Image (cartoon, rainbow, N blue to C red; front, side, top):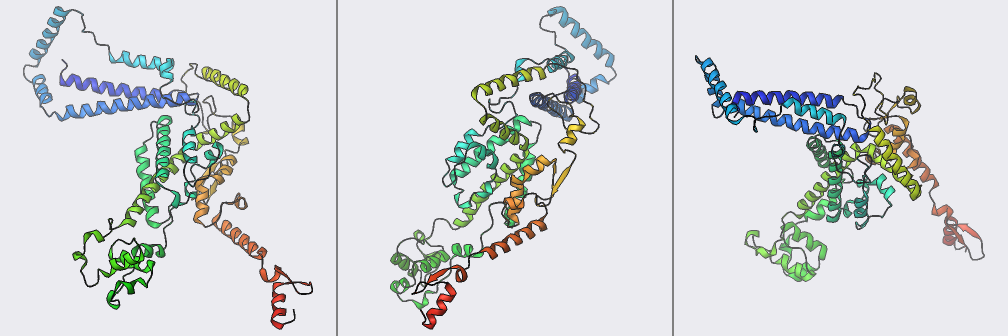
Length: 504
């Protein structure tokens, strides 16, 4: 049995070897998406192993049972050599008695040497560490077919094809809040579960809990100020509708007199007292009149509404849905690259025959086999920080310039977000961030505002468009035509003048 000091030494050695393995894993060349994902999952395993070693070391250093201090005292006492030879004799006796049966423990260095060999020449199991569907192509694309079916089955939601759904599934603020029912919440939870699980598969090193807490904090602030996308606060009239208005009963001597006020006024008076407000006109009048001169605490409990604050509970449920939407917005933004690749893949598949799709699949499998061949683990030389290509190497500088990736665009409407290259810049006009910015400005996100990135420019253009609409609006007095008794066609204003003068 190992001593406490030996156990600590092993744990410290294990942590050092794990850190060394992490460095090698980070420096390893990842030529494709599959290798990148597998590498990050291996890193997660190493990090968890290092954390576990750290926890066990802390427990040993705390020395709650006093064994460590006792062992140090024995080893550092006056008879340290006698203790050393006593342990040596015990080891020799043990090996003399049992020989080599079951006493050999593999050195830790052998375990990590095997890890290095498997990293360079991974087996089939190590090449498929994560489960993806065929549609997801091991982290390249999204598979939203089931969620698309759920979305199309929601009540009050327009049915769209799969390609349109891919482009607009994160535009949740376009759905009226009156249609965000329990079924909508279930769909939203399924969507969030898929996006969260997918990110956990393709980016396992990401701390999702930290991101979720930040998203919820920002969403809480926007909700309190009434600026959350798609959940604008109701006006005071809506509040008055649910708070009710007190009714003075001293002027009424019977329920019949109360009935003259009508259903709505009686309902408002009942709500103000916290009583049930349903039933016929006569029932409401009798229920309200029964409270005349009687303290509320003396009334029959059956007269009171079940929930003292139904509007508060309803708003709390709406807030929970809004928090889920906020997480969907953030996760969708994080998966922008996979989403764009999925749209392109779906469009390409729609334009190809079954035979062509089969050929493409075979070619992709052959390319992956070629890409996965072992190579030296040199870090690619990339002094200009160029984007990496399909082979894991920096793309040529001329290609970098050709696609305009050296140009950055800043959109003030998107909160001064920066986009790299004209392709990403043009694409962002149809994404939720820009659409939400236009929505906050009270401007429709139409084709008139393409390439408009400044708030003042957008407002000026919107005023100009509104002025044009006013000028082009149909004026009934000048454009509505009438025919008099002898067949003359005149406009409305002239016709009214003639009619008043009795000349028709």
